Image 1 (cartoon, rainbow, N blue to C red):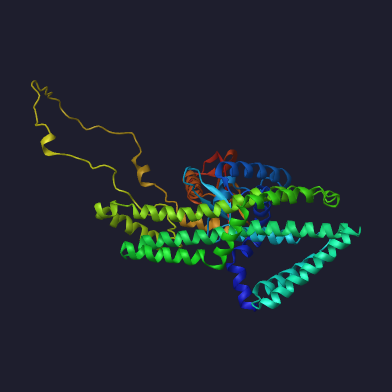
Image 2: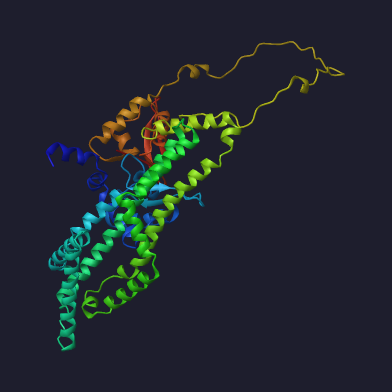
Length: 479
């Protein structure tokens, strides 16, 4: 935890970058409303865009239109792009509409901010008892001496017998309201953390899937050797501590008696007067379905890996169309190379025509002269034109680089500027051509916004000294 490490962590860790972002209140509050609070694992792009549109409309009514100038679709693309995205954009197998999900870093940011909220009280007894119980369980389950294990079980049996005798004699020591509330808060907090941890587990399995696809794309090994290596690493993942823990969790949760017991316990806890006085939400009541959904998503991620291997085994085109597969393999290798540094230009690759243009010699017909040609004998005379041809030599050149530099200079002291303000600060010298160049720059710039619903008027002086009034859509350049 030295200074340089923390400085680097601040610049590179996605959770800290999210907390330090300019639009962090918008990002975190919206994602909390649509993902964390209702316990949704993913949302399609259409539903998420509609929800963000409504949320932006609400915020703009309070803070003004200039607070968040971009559209909902532009914000979602910004949040899902870049080196440290806060949303994961992906496509499912049965839909051509993308879906969005929180990244583990975003989940950690929301969880940390929730921990800052003031609580009714901080329970210490339940946590201390949990520490003791875990330590006892570790010692008890790792004890190799049979005599000591039997002695420990005899001690537990004596404690149970003593408690039974107290109850038979009419002495019952129930929890007081404070202890009930304390343990309920601890159960709720543990359940929320468990759900948030599943995004990290899914992220780890998704990383294995991505590494496998990349290895298949760039490997030159024989098919048998490559599959043996992949399956060996997959067994290592499932036999790791995380894999064993997840598999034990899933077997425990899929047990019908355990599900019935969980439902009965939750029903009994919510029926307590002390718990009802807290007016809790129904988060714990639906925890079983939330855990099943989260665990199923992890398994679906692993199943995609198995499906990828099955397709690889069934790929007969690899042998039948060697040339095609070599071309595809080259594209895949190049994609892996440039995945972390995509080209900045919009047009970075070109495709040939989809079908060949056939022009056979034998399909051309021979020349056939007309049967009755008509030839007129007219005397040609030179005429004079009244068009001013000097206009062709008075063309003006608009320097895009200079206009782009003016935009950057204006954005150094502000976060955004409209085209009208920009023209007031840097007067137009090339007439309408300069305005058209500004519009062309806005169309090429992903950070610029062209709002067709609003218009603005510009007063432009042409090179000949004439003053023109131009009505055009509102254009906003952002930093």
